Image 1 (cartoon, rainbow, N blue to C red):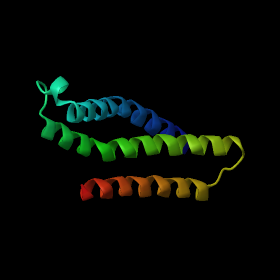
Image 2 (tube, one colour):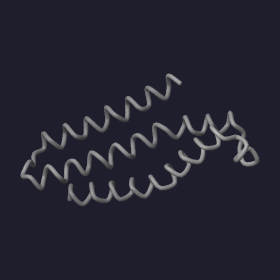
Image 3 (cartoon, helix red, strand yellow):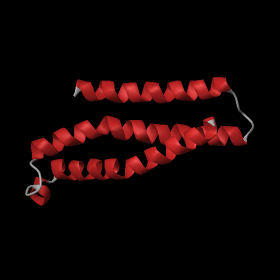
Image 4 (spheres, one colour):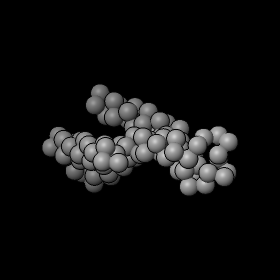
Length: 105
């Protein structure tokens, strides 16, 4: 049950990464090249959007990476609830750090 839930969460987060990364790239380009994207979005709004998307992007990418590290460790025979808890805390700490950095501006 736990494995199926993690697989579903990972798959959901991977699909969520597609529009989040698209927004991240487009807002970054719009902030850096306002001549190309000025008709769509202004430079200050693009920068605000880019900074708002960063913590979400970091959290989703970090979950995806931590999940695959867990899969590799399980293939090598390292299975334990302690390891799962440590990787979960790593993801939470990374997400918290991304949110904290975003709040700093």
